[in-house]
Image 1 (spheres, rainbow, N blue to C red):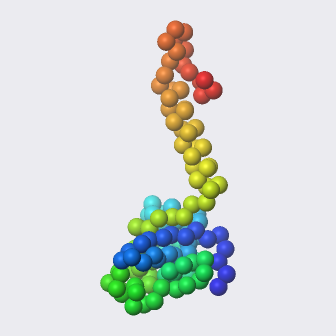
Image 2 (image 1 turned 180 degrees about the horizontal axis):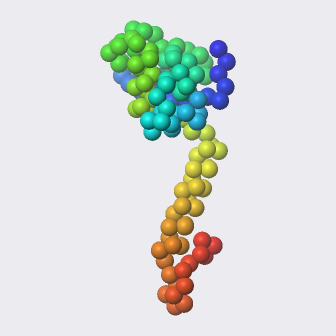
Length: 123
């Protein structure tokens, strides 16, 4: 199976790492509750020990770590509790957005002590 536009959600449990392959833009929607259909979020309903190598988790390992071998239920748990792998570009864009947001808040609330004029974002 060739996976494209993959975002990996990772969860460590019982000393083992479990991963699911998801569509990058659907994870946030699922966590916010706007997307409830797992088939729209996951690229495959299988649980992996390593997505990039294509190694699936064994049923016995799922049973031991999650108390069930139902892969769909385990996928839901991993989606809710796991960490999303974020690329450098996405991380930088998020950081830039946060910096701009903080700068705009500061400029809105602060005034120059001498001129009593509000600060601009450039200052």
